[in-house]
Every structure is written in structure tokens, then in C-alpha cells.
Image (cartoon, rainbow, N blue to C red; front, side, top):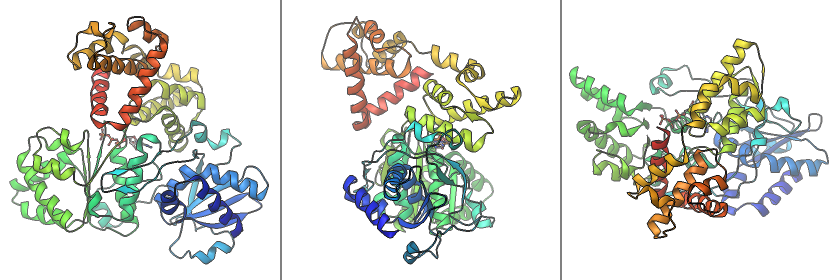
Length: 507
Ligand SMILES: Nc1ncnc2c1ncn2[C@@H]1O[C@H](COP(=O)(O)OP(=O)(O)OP(=O)(O)O)[C@@H](O)[C@H]1O
């Protein structure tokens, strides 16, 4: 059996960059092959590596296993190694941890994805490279497919002890319950590095930013939970920035400020959410600055979330924003279509009693584009509506009916004219420039941005969009869409401008 794994690792090494092999494949070890069940079990040293392997390598390992064992439909199960697993067990019989132990698997969801071609190494404290694809097909509910399935580990049990309770973390927000796609892959890879080595200066603080409902809070809790579970931290605190401010005010009123300060300065890990809420709160910023300096100097990890990147934070002292920028800053982007479908299918299976057909998930995902919270809202609505009508299997028709109000707003609201006017105002141009043939660089760029937004935010086809821009050909629109998509991925400033435009248009 061990030869199978050696051959498998050898094949992966031909396809993946060496950094990725080192970071993600070599830490895995082969546990067993169960002939009767057609199951390969692979162990990962921790939940993050398990999650990464499951998302990125399942499909490929399944193919390799099917070839090696000469039978189709082999299932690959990644499980977290128990502390007493040793490499010698690789040769032994199937190992399954007892129910309720870390690594126990419950429920099943197909969540395999295509090959990944990125790396996940921190680059001098500022960037993490990586790219992979989440395939919609891969997230089909197990019940609806003959494809091999991957078993998902359940969320962690909230530890009962008061130390965990004092952290204010949510035990359900873990890496296991997070769907990974292009839009959060960098953030996820960076988080994995932090869990591996918390407090290292190149990613302290870890600054996560992006617009609302994209999973920043979820990821922050996942880091906290993983570190707590691994026993790397014990004094942890999750807090919303607004609550931090209120606690400070209260402590001044009740003369307990010194206690509060002592408490925060003794933390191993601070998770502070929505830091933009410190806006104009100067005394809070001052205290936070001192806390920040103490923690970073002692190598204690700080994770911060915000709706924008550090330099763009309004009314926050430069001293603080420059510190925020000194660690690792990573953006979470809105999920792409495939990822939205995967999230809907996963959440429908895990959290509702309905069976969401893939076409129905696709339908919802196509119409609701901006964030995951919105998707969750739509799913709850569909699920409630289904319960009310005694329906279990959810089709496109049923979704149309259940989400009638929601979708009419999302479909009808944004028009190409609206986009042209908003973009022209934003770049201080006349709206006529959107249809004109003039080509100075600033006008051409704004026009391409408007075309890109028209494709993103309306249901219009490329020729229809071309018509609205002074009768331009559909290939011109396609070129604009591709160019802006590419530049958006590379240029943080442009990306930010696009976020502002999108938020403005969506009201
Ligand atoms: N990739 C994902 N996979 C699974 N669930 C997700 C994912 N991203 C977000 N969610 C879920 O979407 C909801 C909103 O996420 P979260 O609260 O973390 O967003 P946020 O970016 O912190 O938003 P805000 O800025 O408004 O606080 C949560 O229920 C979260 O679990």
C-alpha cells in the first residue's frame, strides 16, 4: 500500500510547484486502503492542512487511486492525525478515530476541487501566492451523485471550560465550515501560516479586509479556534471594535480601567473585528496603540478585520494605520459564481432539511452576487418557504417563487445607463464620454470600467452592452471585461475603486 502513496506523491510532484509540495503534500501521510469500502484514508497533521488537501487534492488523488487499484469511484478521506499517530501506522490497518475525538468524521458533502497551481508561502510579510478552482460540480450533494464523496469533519465541540468561554469565540466558525474558492484562497492560506506559527512579525498583525458578509469574521474565528484547539494559545479574546470602545468607556465610568488594560495586555491572541469603528475615537485608538505595541513586541498574534485596507481607513491615526500595514494585509473578494454555488449546496446540505438541486443553486448564485450573508438569507427563505409548503426537493421554479421579491430587486435595479452615469460622476467625466469615440487614456479606461460593471451587474449580453456604449462591437466589450478583470486582480487601487462603484450602484 505504501507504494501507492509513494507513486501518488511522485505524480503530484510532477504537477505542483515544490513549495506547494513542501507546505501541503509532504505533511500528509497515507493511512489505509479499505478494499471492501473502496476508501483511501490519508492523515493530515491539522485541520487546516486537512481542509486544504480536501479542497485541492481530492479529485487528483481519487484519479490516481482509481488507476492504481484499478477500480472506479474510490473515496478519499482526509482526517486529522490523532496525537498518537506515528508514521509507522502508515503500514497498519485502517485507522479511524473514535467518535467525538478530533478527526472524527460526520456527514458527507462532495467538495472536491480541481488541481491547484498556486503556492502558499508568505512573501516577506506582505503577500501570499496561490490560485485554485472550486468547481460547482464538485459540490453536488452526495445523495444526488455517483461521484466519489469526501467526508467533512464536523465543527469543533465548544470546549466547556471557562477559558474558552471568556474568549467570546464562536465554536462553529472553523476552517472546516468554510468553503474555499479563488476569492478567499489567499486569506485562507495566510491563515494557515498563522496557525502554524502565530506571532511571527511578518504576519503580525494579520489584517483582513473586504466588503461586508464575505467571511472575514468567520476566518478570524477559525484562526482562533484552530490555535486554541492546537493548544498554542489560551488567553484569547474576540471582540468587535465597537464593543472594545464601549468596554473602555464603561471601565472609565466604573474606575476599572487598569483591570481592563491588564486583561488585554495579558492576551496571547486578540481578534478584533471591524476596526473601522475606531473612527474618531481618539482615546480608544491611543489605548489600542499601546496594546498593539505590547502584543507585537511579545510575539502575541493580533488579527484585525476591516472594510478597507489600512491606508484607506478614515479618521484613524496614521501611527496606527502604518502599524496595521506592517504585518500581512490580505483581501477577501466577493465569491465567484462557482464558489457561490458551492457555498449554497454545502449550506443547504449541512444546515437545512431541503435538497437543493444544483440548477436551483446555480439560479440563486447567478442572481445574488455580492456576498455570502445574502446567499445565506436567500437559502433560509427558500428553506422556510419549502417547510411551509411541505416541499423537500428544491427546483429552479420553486426558487423563483420563493425569492420573487428579492430577485426582482436584484435583477431590475441596476441599468447600463445607471452604471454609465455613476462611473462618469466618479471619474468626473461627462456621461456623453461613455458613448463617444474619444480615446484619451482616462476616458477609455473609465469606459472600460463601465462596460465591465455592466457585464457584472446586469443581465445584458455583450452585444447589448456594446450597443449602449455608442454602438461598439461585442469584442470591444469582451476586451474591456477581460482587461479590467486582470487589472483588478493586480492593482489594489483599481480594485478599491471598483468596490466603491459596486457598493454605490447596489445602494
Ligand atoms: N467561504 C465561506 N464559506 C462558508 N460560509 C461563509 C463563507 N464566507 C462567509 N460565510 C458565512 O457568511 C456569513 C457572513 O460572514 P462573516 O460574518 O464572516 O462576514 P464579514 O466579512 O465579517 O462581514 P461584516 O464585514 O459585515 O462583519 C457567516 O454566516 C459566514 O459563516
